[in-house]
Length: 450
Image (cartoon, rainbow, N blue to C red):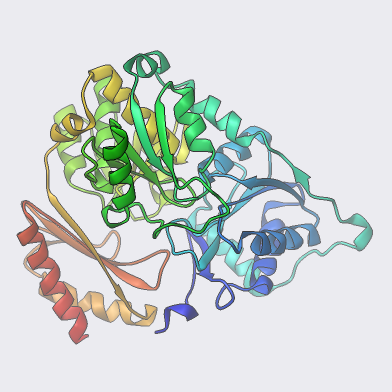
């Protein structure tokens, strides 16, 4: 299957390569469908910094206006900022034009309800049905409302996060932070946020008019420049965000990436020390969370991959903290979504209150080898490939929460279809890299025969 022909529609929204699967016609129709679904009222619209953003944003707004909605243009904003602002402004919903961690040739629409939360699976299905039906309550030319503009979202979100953080401790610690904003949606918001916390900031890649300097996914292979910035500036910690700033990864004081799984682990350990309670993560998240919750005496719940799945379960069990191991921290009391600003604040608070380096905080958590791989496949091939893996892993405890996950006493491996790309993701975790690699090699051999 050619990746260029991919269009992903699901709980994460609508994603595709611009000019191929993602066209202005498709975007306008989805805008009209969402306006029909949300109702004829204000709908917030924000973007990341991709070159295609204006084309996609105008197409979205045209679709919304055609069914009587009032688009409220927030400009370039991090997606957690948009989500927070939906609730505070009383909007009927929101759309963020961003493909998050996908390469720059992609773009996407993320849809949010009036509660600022991603559409739940049944809601996303209803929206998709409206799109396919293509029957919308179009309005006449004299009734079309003009778009509005609102530039207050970033400041209001910053204030909301800082109200929940021990700012005095962080300011007193005098932490020096290097940050890579990937020329993305947080190019201005993140340096300002860190400076408000009293941090000395060394910021790289903060020009929204320049292309992404590297693949925007916040994984170790994309953190070379951040590591160099940490070393050259003498920073105490390095942060890197993806293009829409809902995910965060960390480099230690020597510039070495900790792995995106460490972000959530460090935050959860910090929060449970003062406020123990249920924790929710997805089924692909590291077993570090099992160790942390066991030590704290707190229950751990696992869900399907996808922010909305985690957020929904957190509400059900009254979780104080949770998220996804890809660097997505969710604190419902502050902002019930993946929020890299919340993650940064909690990590800095942990460093300040414990008077420890980031490497010392990481060392307090057990270490496992965690390896991810991706295999491009057609969606129609996925069921057959998963059946083949089930036969390979027959002696293990099998978990079908999302794809198939084989669990042994000290290791696990999972294969699942991605929500955002036409690939199967393979994830393995074991006591050492050789053991994790061995599991992945055996699975890849089965998939290649398939």
